[in-house]
Length: 276
Image (cartoon, rainbow, N blue to C red; front, top):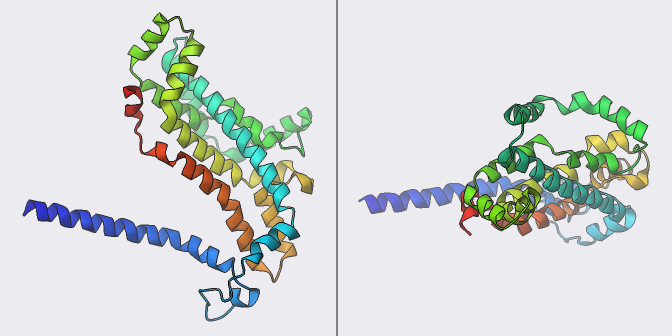
């Protein structure tokens, strides 16, 4: 009786997961189908769900009619620099808070977490003034430089990961003659791949889709990132909205690639990092 109950509960769980996944995946499927339609099919009433004929050339048209490659390259520079900055700065600061001893360590850590409560909008004007005096306006630097200053979410994430590693690893590294930096770089950082993958995904998605900062700091079209470039297309492509959908779908591809490359690390818990 209990076995049948557990089997039925497992089947119901799978059904719920599958239905939930389909519901969440429906907007993406709909957008993909819309990107393959003509404008007449895109605006047809009643809705024509399946494009006929399928216009794969919509994607090549977007590539040829716009500076899509340039916008994508600018976004790639911003996101790669942001990810590198987040991984290095957050992990180093987190290691100090987790493993080193210095005065007011806990108080400083709570101050770092307290900055999470400051709305980003409040900091726009001070940051703009600073970047203007530094000569960074209309460059890509303001879009990624802040990630090199250890953002609080990344510091908290990596600190929790470092705290979960047994102290025996640190003691063994010290006996082998490792400095604190060598212990951090050679021992602790390789053990935190799940947390590094999580930080990479969050940072990549945030910076790749960011709109507010590029609007504030960029004025030259050749410096636009992909979200701003796609928004700019909306005015020029009135009556050709299927191209906008195709551009949006193409802009999602890098995020999907990064997620697929780091997906395997999400199944590993932080507690398993010290068992290797």
